[in-house]
Image (cartoon, rainbow, N blue to C red; front, side, top):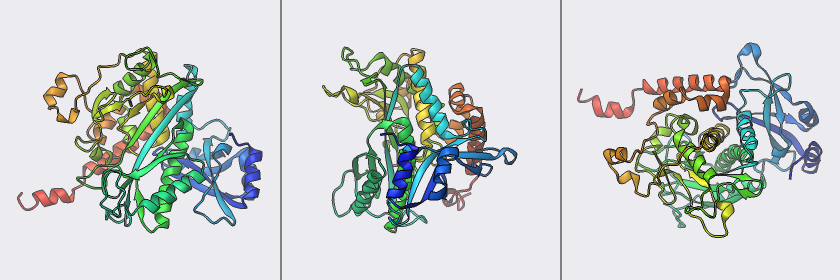
Length: 442
């Protein structure tokens, strides 16, 4: 149920809230925050709170730095790890310009624009269900694991069960519905799955999820990380993202008469995801480390194909069960949990909408395990691959009309500039692996 200004003020009084943290993100998806006290809240809800945007990554230059953080009442939630006396709450903000118009550099606004396009096409719900994986380590100074458990293990090896339990309880206390939690494939790797919901709320929830996981880990004296590939030779952490479009209460992806139970809308959407996957890759895998995960053999799909069963495909469609029409969806499997969720959901949605609007033809499904094929065999089947480095990914994104349209000129130019710099800093490093391999023989 939507919260109003009156509801928020009432909750603040009932729960003895003294501080309200206002959250927003920079263009890389990193949470920024400042706190106000309860006395300032009514003013903040009416007028927003001014701040200097010149030091926020990707925001304005210093001569045009005045920004306004306008809290969204629907995002009000108590922080359960903080004291109940003189409690602390948080609200996620839209970033506005001084004239109260939306700031084009605000990632939340980027997703709102993409959702507006979907609505104009008749889709009033874009549902997403991301599966975020993460690691627990002893501290943030290294990768010393807490356990040697594996996928779905329920043994004494899984010492993080209490961590997951406390995390789930904290997430639910903040209004996030949880479906599953379990140990993942790699040692000390875990997953807590949120129940699907509308994309804007889910993007807000992803920010909250990452903060909660880290806060609860810290409470237990350990460190949680969403780094895509922290351990060599082990599976990295992904964010498989289930998605569907609805018209009213009807799932636009379902067609009972179709042999695969997928509608033309679903086929067009999947075709759009596949066609544009290379140019949006630097968005859903935005770090140099992301491409250490996107390699064959570690359950991270890199081959651009789709299937209803094959988990080596980039896009998978979970098998249809009679009576579960609303569950018909596609799963994009290449995202990682360190992405900016506002941008990631926006570019995936926009790629899918392009496929629907322009009637892209969906390619033939690939049922073969793509990791077992040779390069020549994949080439003969017309199967392309995602970029193999951030440098390559950025060079593809830089030429993308779709991404530029989705992000807008302001963010697009700054994002490309930041990522090129990150790639150059990474590219010129001399690593310990190179020293170990070459120093004694060259």
